[in-house]
Length: 177
Ligand code: GDP
Ligand code: MG
Image 1 (cartoon, rainbow, N blue to C red):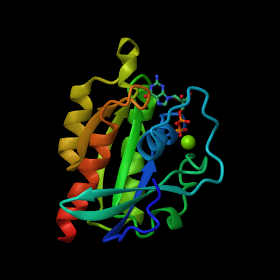
Image 2: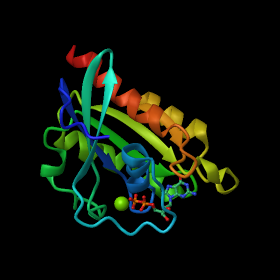
Image 3: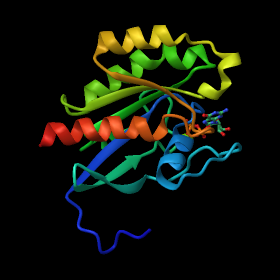
Image 4: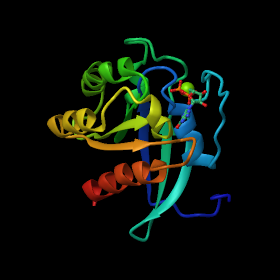
């Protein structure tokens, strides 16, 4: 539905970060358009997508930024983080390395973003539990230690994607209100 005539109370910029192929673009496609693609191309050029939702009777436009294939270490520019009030730090539960890189992403995020940024750690591809390489407990413990929200999602099955965005957006909403 078009939101052309809708009054917007808030615009919240949220950035997606994490290694290549963890499912960032599909998480965004699921949230913004309720779509999923198994052969998704590496992201090129697309800066952000928006979806407007209602939180506590206010309309909130979520502006979700996706890396344009800049997932190499330190390739994400500071412009990407500028003005972000939320971040989703994504790894793939079947690829240990993508979880091991999370501290590096977090450090980069904390170096560039506002200190009050709301961060959620996301273990994506929970539908591939038979190939799991990252125990839920490890991620939960890390998130707790670092003060991050944490959820496992499946963009494929649409599990927890909505909840993940709502968790971040509601927390941001509560901070600004
Ligand atoms: P990005 O590089 O982080 O943006 O990753 P993409 O969103 O392009 O996804 C990389 C690959 O993982 C694609 O083949 C997707 O179809 C696949 N993928 C993304 N999310 C999921 C998921 O939740 N489950 C499964 N099984 N595959 C996924
Ligand atoms: Mg992508």
